[in-house]
Length: 272
Image (tube, rainbow, N blue to C red; front, side):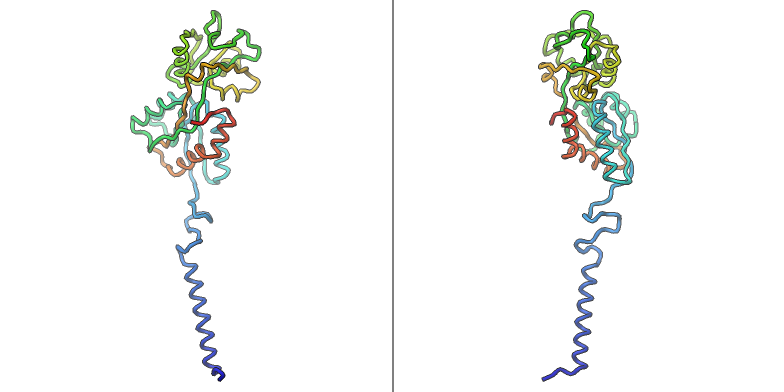
């Protein structure tokens, strides 16, 4: 028996309305697969923006410059300002109110100063290790071949000041080996020590293995077995007064993640 034309038309209209309503429901705000209207990407991850200032140990200059540049390229609209110095100097600056969002120290001792002062947000994350190496001019004028040679009369040795991580590591090795060094100067950062060697002002300097690698053919590196007596661990954390903790956390995640690990490893850093 055939269906009346008017009834058949009504049923077709009803079916079309039902399909249209179902389609509208699937596209309502909050439905699965729909991007946020607040600038989120297709994955639903909020878009990063704004600027932060990262205070980092001098020995991190090369690696953090690379990581910051890559981070900005991958996150348009962000700006990472870098401030490098000896870790102890950076602690003093932050304690005195310098506007820092992230602090990366060359040792746990200086990070602890800030955590004890309640100036760090959350727990610091260890992301790298480093050891000392002797840096000498390419010609090695003082014929340095071991840590003990640094104590020979007439050797113009430059080291980091005791409050700086590389200086504290130097003192640790001295005590462990029973060697007494007589440096001609103590510098406030490891890069200053390296500068004295590359300029020819010093016969030798105690720096990190990563600094020797970065210097290339400007210096000659002399490893010494006793360096394993003073392995420095590098922690990183968000400063409590940061005005952009989301961006600070994202940069820290880059440093501690696979990308950061590769850049740091390529530069000669060890893993914590």
